[in-house]
Length: 134
Image (tube, rainbow, N blue to C red; front, side):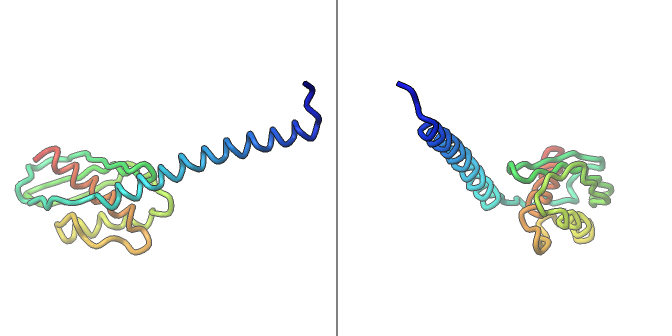
């Protein structure tokens, strides 16, 4: 059976439509998983004064946003936080949160407005760095 040019074109359009639909479904599932990961992120409240002096690496990944940080502790205080990697969409302003953490000596500070999800990921990376070496 020979396909006419019109039937071939319709078949091709349907094929690409189905492929696009499958990719859209996978993307929407990824977005839903990302939003759930952000929503489920919690902080345990570390007593920074109990952390030994040193530099610690921590990371946190929720697929669309990833952060890797180096946290330096001296005399029971966070003295520096360096962002080694920050994969983000529009969350670059959240990188200012490390200054807040150092000033307040508290990990769970207020998020940077307009970059809430990146703020959460960076804070969790800091917490993970300190949890690993506690």
